[in-house]
Structure formats: C-alpha cells, structure tokens
Amino acid sequence: MCRDAMEKFAASLPRLIENPSDAAARGEALYAAWCCSTALGHVSMALHHKLAHVLGGSFDTPHAETHSILLPYTTAFNEVAAREELAPIAEAFGGGSAGGGLWDFARKVGAPESLRELGLSEADLDRAAELAVRNSYPNPRPFDEAGIRGLLQDAWKGLRPA
Image 1 (cartoon, rainbow, N blue to C red):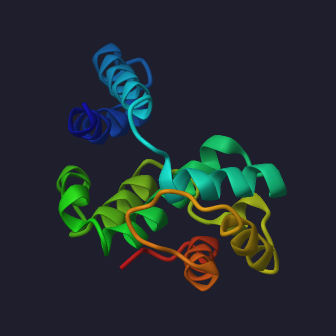
Image 2 (spheres, helix red, strand yellow):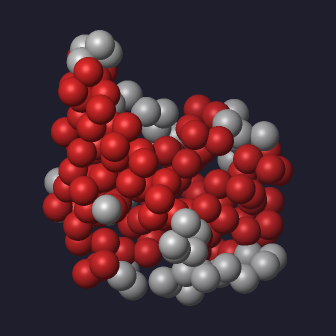
C-alpha cells in the first residue's frame, strides 16, 4: 500500500497543481492518502512523527507544513540505517536517495522548504533537540541530541539532504 501510495502521489500531485479540476488525478491522490492513513494504523511513528509533535506542540508550527518540511530530513537521517527499507521511496521520487528524492518532490510541488519559513528561530532548534530526546521513541537509527540538532539545522536552512 505504501509503495502504491508513493507512486500515485508522485504522479498525481504535479497534475493536480497544474489542473486542480483533474478528477482522475484527484482520485489517485485520494487513493494514495487513504493508503497512507491505513498504513499508519499498523506501524510505529518513529523520529519523524516525534519531531513534528515537538515542533507543533512546543513552537506552534502548523501540522501539515511541519511534516512536509521534516520528512526529507528524517528520511535521510534514517536512510543510513534502513537504506534497503527506504529504497522504494528513492525509486518513487528519484533523486538518488530517499531523502533527496522527497526534498526534490516537495520543491517541485511548491511545499514549504524550511523550518525558518514557519517562524522558528535558529535558537529554537536547541530547545527542540533537547525536547526530542527526553522520551525514547522507536526508530531505525539511534539518535541523540547532537544528531537531532544537526537534522533540525539542515531543515531550518532548507538544505537538500545528501
């Protein structure tokens, strides 16, 4: 379901941006969203969701935009430990890597590109990293405050993940 969703999003969202009344593209995007929401009921949320909740709950960032900005960075962070598992993302979105492909796609569809755009200051990143490591969270790659701070710095700057 997740692979199907990625392929459908990659194909349908650019078409919807070009023509919002494209019923076929809208149906594909809705199907992809349904696949994703169904899959979420069967997995743990890991680092990505943890960081989105920290930023939204502590710094009042908007939910969807926060997730959109963080996804390429949290994916790239975890790609070091789960390259094979994340390979379908790289395949669906191109870019040579899962994190890079998601960043390229987000840029293509006009998603916000940095945490700075959401009003976070660079000083907020220290506090966010501290909050993110307070409670353990299942994640494919172990993380510490310094690792999270680096991830957040890149997301704040809007740099393309390597």
